[in-house]
Structure formats: C-alpha cells, structure tokens
Image (cartoon, rainbow, N blue to C red; front, side, top):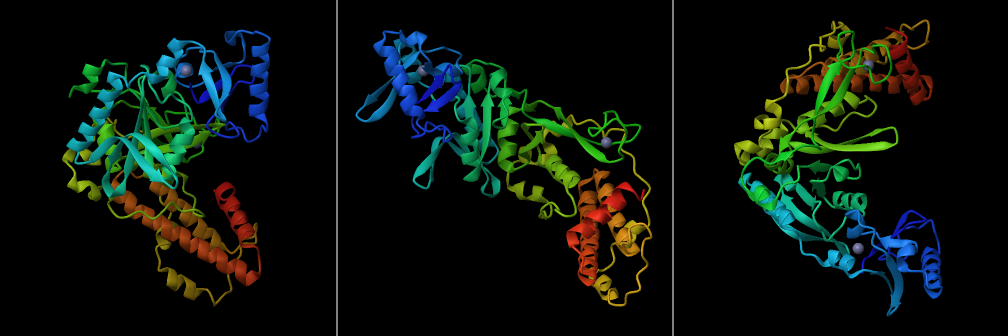
Length: 441
Ligand SMILES: [Zn+2]
Ligand SMILES: [Zn+2]
C-alpha cells in the first residue's frame, strides 16, 4: 500500500491521507477516480493498463508501479499490483542514508552543537518528523532531510509543503541529496554531493557539497563591469549581485548553518523561485542592496558573529573555507564621487524638525516640490549608493547607519510637507523619487 497515487491521465498526485486528495479545487475527485477504477475492474481491464500508479517511493525511483484502489473498513487504500513494488516501501533505510545521519551528528558535535535523528517535533495536534535535527546557536534548529538515489521510505512527495511546515515551526529545512534531478528542484534548499558508498560518507575525510551553495558577487554597473546589466542593455550605474556556484565541505555546511553563518535565501526570477544557501554576510549585503528607504531592512544587532564565539573556531564565519577561495573584489567596483549633500544629512534629526516651522522654502521649478526635499532625497540615495560600494564589515555598519538616518530624515520631511500642504503623502514621495532618480541626474 501507499498513500500517494499518480493519475496518469489527469497527471496529478492523489494524497489518500487527505479527504480531498490534496486537491481542494476538484470536488468529488475520490468518487470519480474510485468509480472509474472499479468500472475498469469489472470489465477485466488489467491494472497495468488503467490510470493509476504508485506516486510514492516507486515514482521517486522512476518505477512505474501499477496500483488499484479499494475500500477497507471505511478507509481508502491503494494497492500495488506487484509484490516487488510493495517491498520497495518496506525496505529499511539504506546504509548511505544512515551514514549521512551519523555524519551530520558528528559534524554538529565537533562544532559544539547537539542533534538527533528521527526527531518528532510536536506541532499542535500533529508533529513534524525530521530526519536529523541539529540544535544550533541562539535557538536555531536545522532540519536535515536526506534523500538519496538508494531506496528510501519517505519518498519525495510534498517537499515544498514539508519545508514550509518546518520553517513555520522554527526549523530551517536543509535538504540533501546525491541525485542531480533532486538538486535542480526549486521546492526546497537542496544541497548535493556526488553519489558515494556508505563507508566513504561515514569517514572523516572531505565530503563535498557540489551544488546548492553560492557566493554573491557584488558589482557596480558601469562600463568596466564584467557582467551585463540585468535590467537592460545600457549601464544603469547601480549595484547588482550575481550568484556564483561554489563548493563547500559538507561538515562545514552542517556547522555553519547551525551557527547562522550560512543561511538560506530565495528570490524570484520570472515564475520560478530559486533557493540556495549563502553566507550571512552575503545575505546582509543583498538586503542592503534591495533595501528601499520606504522599507528599510531590519535593524541588525551589532556584530552578530560574536554570538558564535562559544563554538570552535571552525564555526566562525571568518574562518570558513568558502571565504578562503573568494576572489578579490571585482575591479568594476569603483567609488563614485561623493556629493557634499551626503554629509549634510547626518545632522541631528530633531534640529531638522525644529527648522521646519519657519517656512519660506525655495521651490523647485519643475516639480513644485521644495528644494529641501529634493536635496534630502538625493542625500539618502547617495548614502545608499555609497553603502553598495563598501566591502569592509565595519565600514558597512557605519554607512548603513548613515543611510538609515538620511532616509529617515527625508521621510520625515516628506511627511511634514504633505501634512502642511494637505497632500497625499504617498504621491508626494512617488513624485519626489521619480524626479530625483530619473530626472535630476
Ligand atoms: Zn510504490
Ligand atoms: Zn545595471
């Protein structure tokens, strides 16, 4: 028996554990499918020539395993036609899988973290079953799910649903495989190693992750840039990030995800959501890059790396082997001339507020907006641009603060102006940005 059935004609998976077969948009699906299957049966159509196949382990392994449906004690059941298919479901966990579980726990332990295999985490009235759960720093929990090309009980259904459920309940899902086809799926943060026998996986030697981890190359879009502008043919003058695949050692991956030095990110490209792992430093820079001053990235605690100090040196982000190989910053990154306005924005915001009441503002002839607003917005944008050009962690912290303050000052001024003039604040801001970013320079 299996819980998931693949319908060949409809090309959908039917989850028999759910009343609606996991298709809320298709009412009476069970009745239709069940009755059709019974009808075929009465006509003597062989199971292999009907519509249903095993959608669990068999399908994951690329085996077409015919199934038929039945009701037993009021329960819906799907039955394999062939015994060999049924046996695939009761096979014990492979040696390779066990070797991975042990390796994860050992790597975690060497990094000062604890963990356990086959963990059930209570969630309301149900639970989350995790292959191997690592208890990381600051309450971080990494849920490793190993899916190998060898026989596996759990199969590969509902990866996205399982990942989302884990994530919602405080477990960062980390899916690992030795199958290229799995690693290319975008339903979870997959990492992949080469196919290796159990005794190699179990050893202490190097075990590499060959896909799933990226380094982000931050570069400035000018005529010297190595990459084409992602937004068009011309140079846009902004900063961009380009992800590049990079190998990482499996043990380091286990420890650094636990330490929070390697983190999952996702981004949308067209209709696809890409998911991979990056260093927390790259993630922070990416947030800065995509940060807009209407939605500033979350305030960070100072020096987050310090939190990992109770772990062994291998867990500290700075000693990560993945950063050892990082090439020097691309030559394309050049500092832009800093406008004088950038400095003026560091003025005390309260002083700025106090200046407000005495008005007589100069007004920009084109937009009708006060020149002061334009200057403040330019300063905020300039501060953001400068942030994109810095590489040093400390410099970035300082500049991020400068940007935040400049952005906050500009926004306060917009609010004040809109309120005094009884204008729509959003429209004022949109007009201001449009002018500053697309007209003024
Ligand atoms: Zn099966
Ligand atoms: Zn560009």
